[in-house]
Image (tube, rainbow, N blue to C red; front, side, top):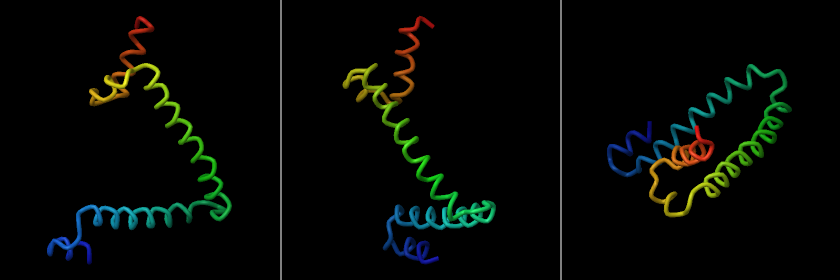
Length: 95
C-alpha cells in the first residue's frame, strides 16, 4: 500500500495512484482471462493484432466524419462533438 501511504504524505500525485491501481486490475483480469482461453499464447496476441487496427480505423473514421459535418469553430465550441454531429446528420436527412 505504498501508494496510499505516499498519498497521505503528499509525495505521490493522484495520477500515479490511478495508474498503479489500473495496472494491478488489468494484470489480475489478464490472469483470469488467460485461464479461460484454450491456447492463450496463440489466441491473445492474435486478438490484439486483429482488434487494434479495427479500433484505430473506427476512431479515425469517426473523427473524419466529425470534420466533414462540422466546422472548426463548431467543434471547438461544442461540449459533445458526437451529439452535435449526429444532430447535423439527422437534420440533413430530414428526420
